[in-house]
Image 1 (cartoon, protein in one colour):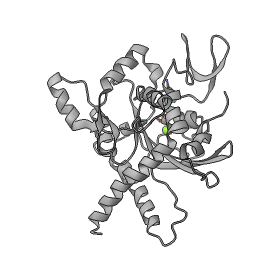
Image 2 (cartoon, rainbow, N blue to C red):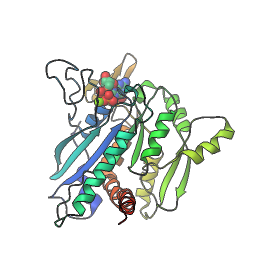
Image 3 (cartoon, helix red, strand yellow):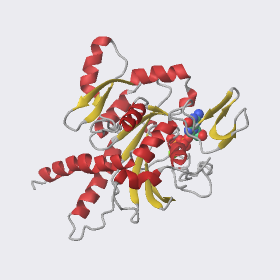
Image 4 (cartoon, rainbow, N blue to C red):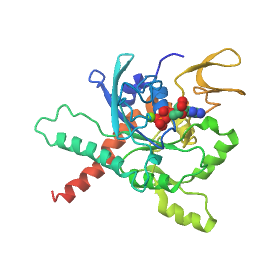
Amino acid sequence: MGSFVGFANLPNQVHRKSVRRGFQFVTMVVGDSGLGKSTLINTLFEHKLYDLNAPRSLANGSSLNGNANGRTIAIESKSADIEENGVRLKLTVVDTPGFGDFVNNDEAWKPIVDNIDSRFDAYLEQENRVNRSKLMDNRVHACIYFIQPTGHSLRPIDIEFMRKLHHKVNLIPVIAKADTLTDDEVVAFKQRVSIFQAFNKVHQRVIVAYFLLSPSTQILNDIAHNQISIFQPPIYDLEDEETIAENEEIQSKVPFAVVGSDTFVTTADGRQVRGRSYPWGTIEVDNEAHCDFIKLRQMLIHTHMEELREYTNDVLYEQYRTQKLLSMGV
Ligand code: GDP
Ligand code: MG
């Protein structure tokens, strides 16, 4: 496996020369403990941002990534400078406490919203300085939301979370640990989770309404209530047919059924691949026939990283800023 992550394509995504300064990209991961968040981050960036083999308790005490059980107990961010073909990326991953970890999960979204807001505030504060030539962009550009593979549909807590967050961040839902589902289950799952697509004229974004499978009379209500805007590669304003087809292909995979693994295993035919071995065979991370990991990585890093940054700046941050200033009576 080559260690080509794909962000070296950023200058092409940007069409301008900010290569020397490097790029900042902040991604947040949210979902229950043990759904594979740390593993997927390592798999995506081919970087051992998280030491998955670290003793989960013991001497090194407050291990970087959590308490004695290896759980993340507070919102933590980690950064790494990665370079690829002369392009520098400052990657920050914001890890959040697992949802299921609290006795009362009612407001599990709140510290996460607060974190996103405070990053917006920090940016706003920089903009108000006299010298604003070097703005640090620590706003969250993408939020990968891990859906449990076991429930086979969204839980109320998932909907609640996405509804609270979708106006503030580019939401990217994934079905975690897709290797624990059969192919049929993945298809059925996706049908249940993402059914209704319509166009949002205001922002020209695709809106996907999520709803729990419920008696049909309930469905329209649910759609009306749960209209959740998630990030999709835009297909409007594109002339290039190839790109349109590519973006439609990515859209069709949402929510991405992902498998994470940063260790290599040997397949039955003797290839070394990143994957997970089972008595009946190997699930390969980097094989599109096995899971949607490649598509997720393509969108997040290779083709739409700049789109995610731009939308964060032009739309999400702008909305936040306007509201904030209005509330301050400015
Ligand atoms: P986190 O708590 O969400 O950060 O989860 P971790 O990344 O620490 O993973 C928890 C456990 O799930 C570890 O034992 C991983 O090896 C395992 N795991 C991670 N990703 C996958 C996956 O895609 N499939 C399966 N079957 N197990 C996974
Ligand atoms: Mg973790």
